[in-house]
Image (tube, chains in turn red, purple):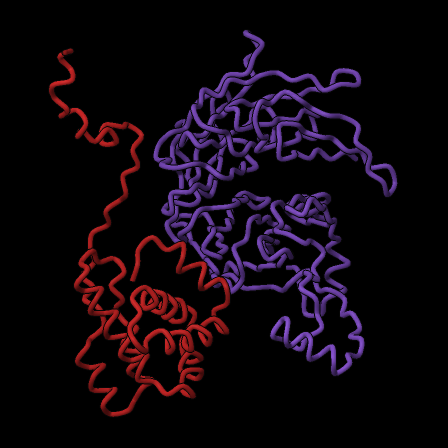
Length: 150
Length: 349
């Protein structure tokens, strides 16, 4: 038999690693973003101050962080706030956010869609409707084109 | 008046306007692949085209026919966009090879040579625009990071005067880059003075950067679908259009370094609603889940995305007329004075 049929180690070489034109993603320094303060948010929810809870939950989004645990935690905090809202309060809450806030909210909403739980989708859809009314298609496009997820 | 249109195969058709009719007078066939970019130099009357066949052709009118001259771009991916420089002595081609080919005519050898700008481009160049000084070039690409990049492209000219973007000028040097927007850049445009550059990016934002000791950047996120083309019509006003099929006005306030939305430029005439019988209402509700009798037809002039805006009269300083072309195959000409008087609250500064 020919010699080259003996070893198939060459099949395990990752040829793309040797490509000169390979696109290397810039690694920004992971910012010291810890995500929103879960304790403070919990307190505000217990006190019934939902608006404040929403605003605090939307602070410090772990966008630049590469730690999935931080992102999970942030997502959980925001989801908790969103599901604790009464349906009638959603619209004024969205209106109280500025442009960046609406964009950020939309990002968390889509993140929430990725892993639906029993009730989350229904609530998220209500939030989505109100956020879309304010942010428009542009805010959805920005979620889709963002390279770093929240 | 003649208008070249690149079609989505490998031919270029030139139409001439006779009164209100357009007639096809020339067909330019040379490209082997789709023609992706075309630019007509009005002074020297030359057309440059570039395509997916990795070539560019410069067309000159000899008698009654356009004769092509091949330009070797030395790229190994498709060319995406091409622009003549203001003096029309060179042109730049953006390509998928992650570089810009700047081509100029070498008199001695009687052919076009090209020089490459490579760093720090990391992705396909989608759009280009020249600074009025014939030296600086702004480029927008797909790398989600830097847009726009402003390069120096000077080969045979004398040392140019310093501009708002800097004064040291070796070839290929990056004079400015911005990371303010994400998403790929669809269109980039210098203002008439060259001190400002605007760009539209796929994350539904439009932004303006002003050169100076420290460059200032202002961007505006919009609630609409992404814009595909943007151009200055005065030093402070921009017209942009895109997937929403109507042109819009943006205003840049340099004192506040901020951009604002100036208004929609295509307000469709309200058509009279004819009365509906109860039966029709019910049928609509059943079929379309809405009692509305409006058909799902766009009321804007363009019925599909607008891909290009070109200034017809007045230049980028005092544009009087501009033209939009779209993916619906349509071309519309807009008169700025008429727009200003037709829409109240519209102020073009």
